[in-house]
Image (cartoon, rainbow, N blue to C red; front, side, top):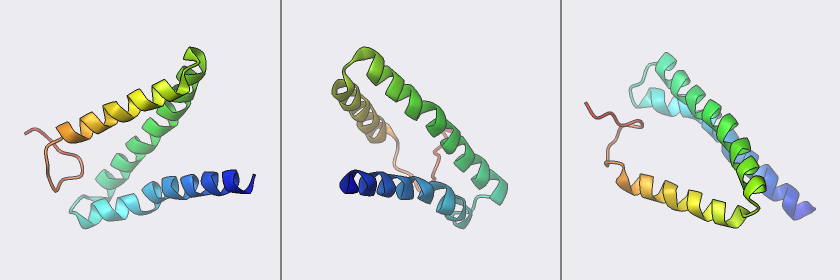
Length: 93
């Protein structure tokens, strides 16, 4: 139980770093405070939707390891596909 609690606590600390330091990081890179807050808000809302949806799908299909592996491969592919840029959110224009 202690190890599980530590893992859960570290996960939450990592997640809290996004909304704690994300707007400051974006503002230091030249974003306005409003734009930085909006971008972090969008990330948080996507997390609120995608995390329970992933849990639901894993439970429904009864293959959580397959779903986690497929999702990890998709994210890895998307990260490799993104152009290298200093911008946090890259635009095509």
